[in-house]
Picture 1 (cartoon, rainbow, N blue to C red):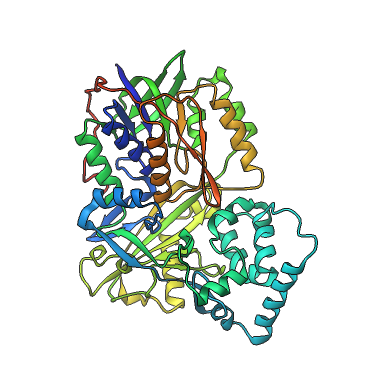
Picture 2 (cartoon, helix red, strand yellow):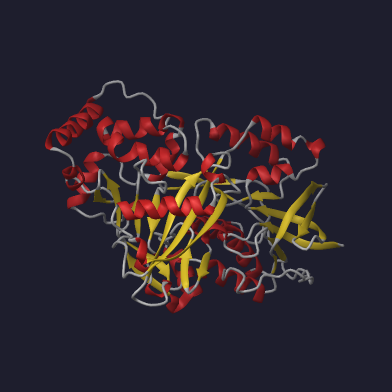
Amino acid sequence: MNNRTRYLILGAGIAGLTSGLELIKRDADVVIIEKNNYVGGLAQTVIREGFRFDLGGHRFHSNNPEVVGWLKNLLGEELITVNRSSRIYIGGKFVDYPLQIPGALGIFPMVEAFQMGVSYLRSVLAVNKGEDRSFEDWVVRRFGTKVYDAFFRTYTEKVWGIPCNELSADWAAMRIGIPNLWETFKHSILPYKDPPATAISKFYYPINGFGSIPNRIAEEFISGGGKIFTNTRLDRFVPRADEFVVSVKTGAGENLEFSVDHVISTIPLPVLLEAFPLELGSRNILKNNPLDYRSLICVLITARKAQFSPDNWTYFPEKESIFGRTHEPKNWSLQMTPDSKVTSLCAEIFTGPNEPTWFKSDDWLTQKTIQRLNEIGWLEKEELINNWVIRIPHAYPIYDLGYRDKVERIRHFLQQWKNLHLLGRTGAFKYMNSDGVIDLFHKSIVKFTFKVVNRCDQVETQSKTLTSITISFTQNPKHFQSSNHMFCQDASAG
């Protein structure tokens, strides 16, 4: 069966859903394809025995008042403000994060703390600073070798699975909001007037979990006439003269075919390229320009205790912990647990699809996590209620050295189809928080409303450049009517 629609969006994460909603508001004809049986992607909230868990702990912060207003209109009274509290566990001690100087150095012996100061001065006074090519280059030249080794290197390598001298400096420039050790010290005394996203003290959060955002967007999208096919995978992606023929397969084994004017892809680039006809050469492009994504394993734990810690997030760079970060949902919203006498924890294990950890059993991962929580004094075995494991492939794009050239060559290949648009963390291979995706699309949608622009623009946002999509709109389109596999509100209830 061939179905006709003007816009087809691949992926029902924040990027795909926001695109679809804004298009529907402009009377466009839109269908969204999602491989999972829920919407939201990494931004979903799962429910286990009355406990709500986000997968990774997401917060919303934007300096754009229009985007904040958009979110407030979407969620209304369900949106709350949360005071941020996060720490790093180093040498058996918890240190505030973002780093507070001199407090952060106080956990070290005086001689070692003095050596950190000397190391920083050497980096500042160095005559030949060279080029910031790697993450290591960027941090050492701004914080010194000693601070880099103590606070940055081990955690970063744990998250990304590669040495810091093989990770692009782009990642440091994007994610380290404080430019050097002196600025860290200064802002420990004088707070920021307009803090970077990584140094904020408060953020917005939906009272029932971050998944409320994609679920509410999906509801408005469907009520506006949009269609979401969940549990449906991309099979073939065939470009033609002025359109695409997109074949998908449902979980029930049914094959569907769509003739499409414009495709917005938010799915991983390798998945998109592998769906092209073999004769177009997409697999050779992918083979010569391999892109790596980091995977995530979330170990979800519930316990008979009031609280594990006061933190929203806690970071664990040391090798003794199999997990790299934890977040306690109750510290974000009291609605995340069924009552005040119990709490929960999401422990995040960073790994890759070819690493041994990815293939470990759920029991093994859980036992390793519980054992470490017991060792640091957070969990007694008799306090444990239950536990679950969730695995997420393609969670984060890896900015290894040379990634930019590889992405550019893939983009160059895809730009021969002017009505194919890439968006989002996995679709554009651009690391963005959910608020960044919404902010970016908001700028694009306003700029290009009601006209066709057949190219990709660059949107400059402070210290980083993000790729925006440029799309076209038509008034009074015909709406696609089939709804055999439409999204249902409770699909992510777990």
